[in-house]
Structure formats: structure tokens, C-alpha cells
Length: 279
Image 1 (cartoon, rainbow, N blue to C red):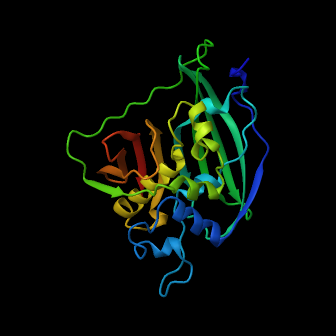
Image 2: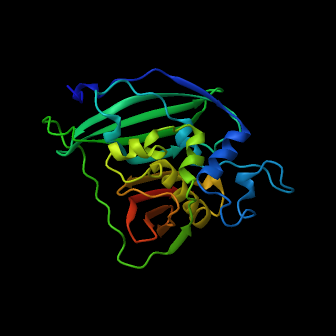
């Protein structure tokens, strides 16, 4: 059986990871911090700027809280794409530290043309305090039709008014090569031959890199640049991004809640149904 619907509820082995100031800086540059204006985000891209203490982008918690899930099927990895991503932060990410994360399969859903597998992981710092809860969904094309549940439906609609703000941020042509140094070495984002096996003309940008760029927009526009204020973030990946494209994130504010979506420079929505909570 390519996809195992009975995997829901299983947990994987815990993973412990230690990170340093350098890892946090590399992640920030990997999601475009400082691009176009090297002096604009020095608190996230340097550790020794006068008058600034180093801070960590909130979306770095997504990487720190990842852990290997239990097996949930046998399939061609070139057919797998990142479908959804959510993170809830229980505290700001420290500049350095050690974290242990454990992942479990929350659900395996039949979407007809493919299977959607939802994985949740909890990350705990070495002092026992929770850092983040990470929720990811992956879509495996061609693996649906096994007769399983379709999964819960979510309602989302942009308000019937213009966005309260729109933030445009650039990416580099080599952005995926930078981002992969933070740990995601999936060759879909670097190897042209592998990308063609997956149905793409060329390597695409990591979904979590796009997510990190949108997170920067939310951080600076909705949270005043304060990482402690961005408490949660969810988005659905609706299209791929080519490294080098500009990304515009549109925001609608409603008290502590922010709705958002992110488009490429040709207007294609690449993160849809976005929600964030800002303190």
C-alpha cells in the first residue's frame, strides 16, 4: 500500500537539535533578510551591531520544531509537495539553545488526486519549557483514491475591502541555494533533473522559504518588528515560486488577528488563507 491510512496517531522518534547564533543568522539571510537594504534588519542578520541585540525571526521555530515522523507510506518523493504550514510560538526563539521535538501523524486524508498527510510536532527546550507547536501538511500527488476521509474543511475569505497593508519583498535567483543550508536539502529545490521528475521546468523555491518571507512581512508590518508579538502563523501553499521572484504579502487586520495572502510579481497567489495572531 503506497499510503498507509492507519498511520494516523503514530509518533516518530524524538529529535534533539542544538543551534547557535550563526544558525539563526544563516536562516535570516536564507529567507531574504537584508536583501536590497543590508542595514534594515541588522538585529536579525548580525550579532555585533552597535546598540542592537541579536534577535531571531519567529519562523525559525518551524525548523527547530521539525522531527522525523513515523513512516506513512511508500511513494516517489518527487511527487510530494508542502501543502500547509502552521506554527504557534510559546515564547520568542532564543539566539542559541537546544530543543527536543517529537512528531506524530495527526491525519491521513484522501483528496482524490492525492493524499494529504498532516504532521504535528511539539518542541521543548532543554530547560523543559515549550518553544513551539509545529503543524505541517504534505500532499502526495497521485496517491489518493484509497477511500479515506477528505478531512476537515476550513472557511476563509478575504474581507471585502482593500488590504490594510501590502509589503513587497524580493528573493534572490540563488535563494533556494542559501535556504537549503539551514537544513532542507530536498533536491527538488536544487537539482534540475530531480525537479523535472516532479513535473517542474526548474528547481522551485522551498515552501518554507516563501513562508519565512511572508513571516518577515507580518513581523515588520503587523508586529512592529518585535518577534515576541508574532504568536502564530498559518498558510496554505497554493502555487510554487521561482527563486528571484518578488513576493507581495497583503494584510487585513482585525484586532490581534491578521488575515493575509502572498502573491508573486505576476499576481499568482502562492500562500492563501493566511492567518496570524499578533499580541
